Image (cartoon, rainbow, N blue to C red; front, side, top):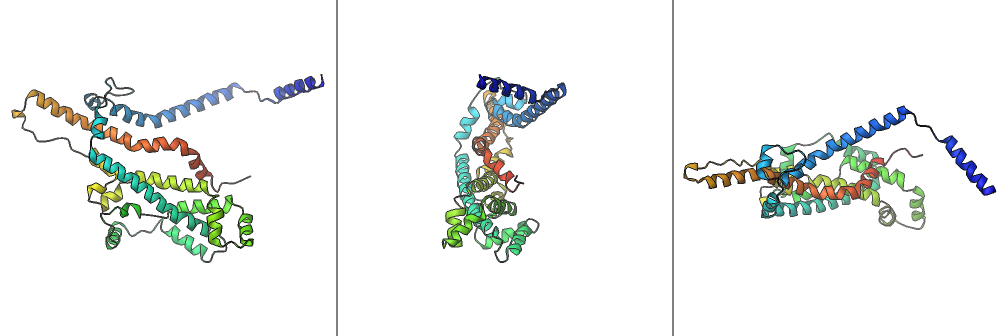
Length: 316
């Protein structure tokens, strides 16, 4: 009986302490949900439009009357894209550049941030200001081109890998992580046991910094995957072009050609028109194929993006 009375009293206290929702609260929640749904649809629809146009017939895509679903479903554009060898070469180049440049960024950023997180490091402030100045001071395109040419990087794959290795914002985020997320007592214990600074970094700091390593890797990978300007400036060999530059070439492709239609049959003219319209659906198909890896990867790594945003925030 005692247990039953206690349970009943607990339920009464819970009901008494429950906050009563007014009509204003309910209306506020409804408006918030409606706004969130609207913003979500606005963000999702452009990618949905790219997807449905890539599966539509070329004639329907050119008419521009697609809104939610194509009336004619076809894989002709994807078949044409998959048969294009140059696109696959660009896809492979982009994968190579993304993996290599991400590793390059991590090898420079993580140790540098760890060193700058040590308050007793000589010249720590001056080095930090040196990196900070790079956000506002740059030589420009012509000096950069001359420098890369003197280094022998022009028209090579290395120009896409050995780009900007350390960004100031990434350096600050990583440094803040080491200053706030790993207790100094852990380092002091290692020093007492006779560990050197390098051993402390390899055996203690690095294994405990999986989250920030993932954040920096994601930032570098996303930036490299969508990069095309460096290849546009420094690479003339099309076999070394990344996928995004190949996509740019297709997007600005002029499908109009000078044809002598007097010597062509009606069937030939219709086929040429169909092939010209097919370029439109191919463009959307390539855009979707180029974005697909990031779309698949992001839901699994979203928590690391949130972790990166929260690094250095006020802790209770």
